Length: 143
Picture 1: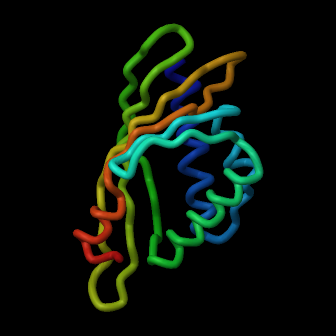
Picture 2: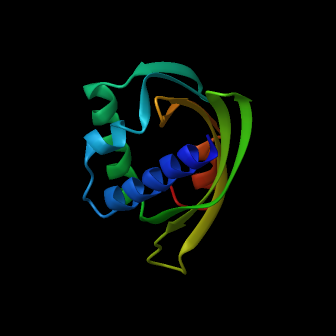
Picture 3: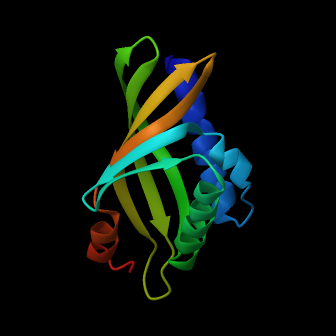
């Protein structure tokens, strides 16, 4: 399970990098997710399907990240909490770099907790829990 999850997040990080460069393949990004998912943050809880709407929302999200000056998004650490032989929580520590015109680049570290399922050899994200991204960006003067 651990190797499959680490490979999943290596792909995730790579797709994020390509998307920040404007070279995103939304089919590849969608391949990281299960057919259905749940997301929770201080803004609430939502559910969704891995469909064309997800791809559209993801493309808009990457465009927003580029617009606010996101230069890089890299994983600094992954810790797994196994649930059973097919499921775990992947606690992923990210480090985001934002370009600033009026000062040095800003680096923000944050964690996201992903619910991961491994079936037939493939690990996929079926949910995540995150903090208040907008408040964190405001606190650091990004938005």
